[in-house]
Image (cartoon, rainbow, N blue to C red; front, side):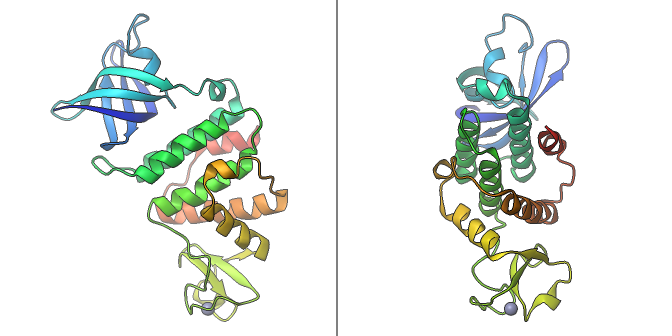
Length: 246
Ligand SMILES: [Zn+2]
């Protein structure tokens, strides 16, 4: 079977003498593992389109267990991301997130579009990186099937409580009558709650210049980190640690 599809290179590992083993998030096949034969040879026609973060058009054919890349045409290599270590680390974090939730044979167009737009925006010189990352995290969870309930209490449905907490386990906010449902529920200020709703309602391209205060960013980051850990069971995002230290 031969197939033409666009995709993002999530990961690239050395394989054998001169090959690369790629993990690609494709539009038509979901996530695939594919060998790019000879891609590490200096004159290979594959080399430019198979680097990590590349958005390329691939021609793939399926072997017994793996796909083989027979052609790759880079459409966007996000050069600016490669020149800035902090942005590069954040972009790696986005790739890691996407890798965890995607599966072979399972397409996810909304996530595909979100990833492309996020990388495109991150590569711009004037951008509120924190806002873009928080918007990505919120919408990433939504499109991966873990949409948090932020408009009413997940336990009793009340939508006009004065105080809420956020429960990762229960998948959304708990009103003060229902705090006991999850003793680990986290504090969430009304401003942060409003910000989550706003980020979920807006396309990531609309918020690239939105500045959020350090307080809101820290509170939202903590909540989302916990929510992501609880639902996708991955605990060590080294790229995120690196990005946050820079
Ligand atoms: Zn309640």
